[in-house]
Length: 285
Image 1: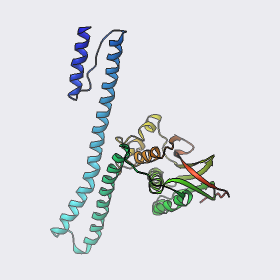
Image 2 (image 1 turned 120 degrees about the vertical axis):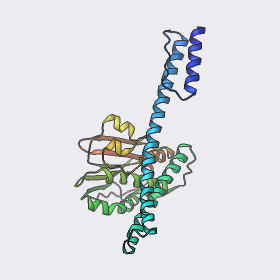
Image 3 (image 1 turned 45 degrees about the vertical axis):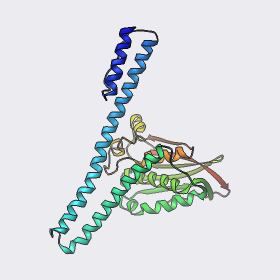
Image 4 (image 1 turned 180 degrees about the vertical axis):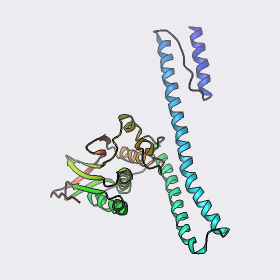
């Protein structure tokens, strides 16, 4: 037993130095054997976390460097006169757009960190979720037109007051629609549906496109995995939008699921508590 304890102690010291590939080989069926197995599982999980963190840092560094390079290049061109005066306004608008994108990335990181630490404070009120969905949809009008996206909107109730933090749920709807418009193919379909079941309102947002594998569906919520890598399309986001969505829904003690098949493409469904007003309305666009 003394030898086995020495092996475990040396392996623990090895891992404490950041070396997570160390495995303990102890062929015993008692408590020491179980301890060695638990130790190996812990080391493997730490190794996976370290790898995903490295991938995230690499991905985020690229996403931050790209707009910074654009900002620096256009600013330098304006200052040294390389860019003609009649083109300066156009390039300054690009600089402003890239600056806004940087600010959003940083704010997303800070907000996600706050959410994961449990520091998110919710200000719950009653609000018309159907109306919110339609208002958020207006933000994507140009993208919908450009990609010739067909919309199907089915709002199950004339008026259903959701109970939650308006700003946070607005962000959930925005991020899900942003995700849908980003990854739907041209001439594709986005479906939006709300359905009342008991005291819960179920909100579904789906888009046609490539079907995700079960492994990709597992990774889709991971803050250290780029969404564009799992979806195989655009490469413009650090993939924090869906992580933020999940944390907001968790903070409301509600549920969110994602599934993917040939019929719908990729679909997200989340729940929220409601105040109910009768009258049914269904609308298709």
